[in-house]
Picture 1 (cartoon, rainbow, N blue to C red):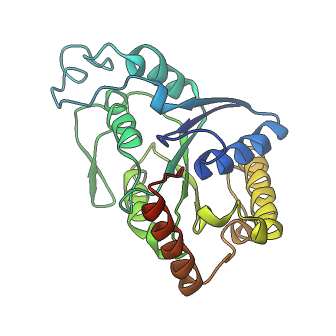
Picture 2 (cartoon, rainbow, N blue to C red):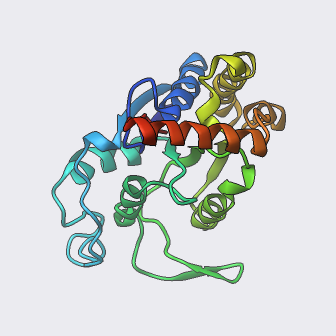
Length: 243
């Protein structure tokens, strides 16, 4: 099994909670025997879709842009059985980098229209990978992921498209705080288990997802601590990493 893991965080290194979670998921996927390639989208050149429909009319299945998406990423995406879209939550949605990537998969669709169970959609010209969405948020409330979840559920509801799992981790910013180490270790262990389950059964059990999303901190305590941190950084003129 080939898996393509796309990290759309603009940040890298130990401070990225997207990377932290994705590393554990990949570990589990590899443990289960799958082949995984991880790509940091911030290191690639992916031009925006310009809506010219060249990929539907003049060069069916091939984008007009000649960049990393056309020459490298799109072929790898088509060859994969599973794609993991990893993104920090930006304005309650995926990052612009990931959105650009998804828009550039348009050549996989045909221009014609079909209707299935009352919904109009474009049929696919290629078999496309099943999707796993992994997202982290600094804020502690799970409902901050609602808009992203609604979007991806709708996006992959058409025939030929498949959403395998949604992995959402709120309060990710406190996962590296020593006080929360025991719970954070369990969350990361569960994320590794989720990777194994995806390869073994193409789904993640409710028990494993429950461990991944377990509460870390209440909203009031989080807000008070975060506000103190921002006041200190502003006063000192410092900076910090992100998701």
